[in-house]
Image (cartoon, rainbow, N blue to C red; front, side):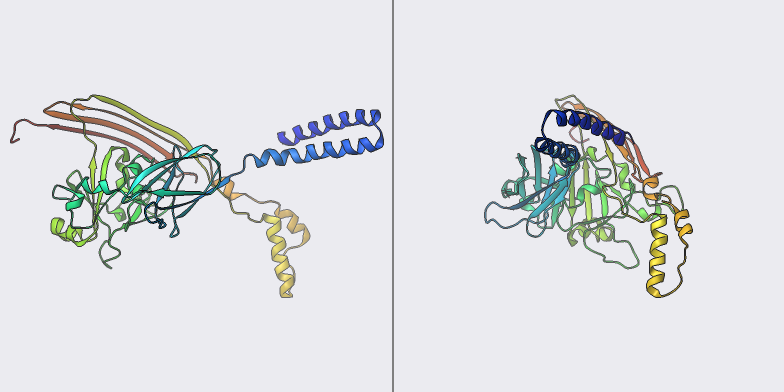
Length: 400
């Protein structure tokens, strides 16, 4: 209502100025001036609206050596939560309101991660280099550590860049980050469970979830036994209790060799998680936090009450039967209730982390705390996490 009132005042001011010009100029000049003012008045709202429209960012990612398209590359706009994957042609597309310049963060298994600054909205052709140095990296393999060049089984590592992306749970980091691993979110509720499949659906009567090993301790994530507190509520992800920022590395054992280490429990694959530890010679105090908001990107265009009643009558006429509602009944329906606006909201999300770490030649320690609060865009849905972790290691002697 305020916008309409301001617009009427704007028209009144322009019409008063126009009347003065009409007296001072002839009819021909007055017509030209009137057309100019009409264009400014009518066109200015559309011009201002066009400046706030979303834009489309597109590009293609290929191998720098043979120019082959790379499918499944994670493209992330730095400083935001906007992230997409390239398709089988290596193409990607963002629909965003972000302004240039902005920075793309690119990560792909077996290739060097890259950051590229985008200065315009044109199509971008981007290449990635092979990461041959990755073969000398040390990864956790369940029974210790090995260099990648010495590994005979199928083991995949989550790229380091993905571990820095804000996420409710670490299983969200696996989505699109590891080839051969399928991650499906069960619902849009904050903290909801995710279905992870490494070796497909091998069992009909038993579970198909992988085995989780966190710092050498075996953990079971039976989401079927956890819920949001109500008997019919959405399931809550048991792994969401782990702060993703406390994770140092994630390794995925994908082939049958995992059963040689963990037995039949590893038949569906194994996910090995290593958390952060203190480093000797340094004492660090780190704080990290962010605050944002979420909202529905689009609402369905639905009929109101009167329009729905008119539609029913139109169907009756096409079927050759009497109308269901009279004209007075149609008017009585009115606009009805906008249940979409009543049930949806602009929801805040915030995260705060504080850690203290350090160590010397004989001991290392790390203390961390996390507060995470995500309100869902649907009323009465939210996820709140309070977590703390203490890690202390000491070398008492050479043998202990």
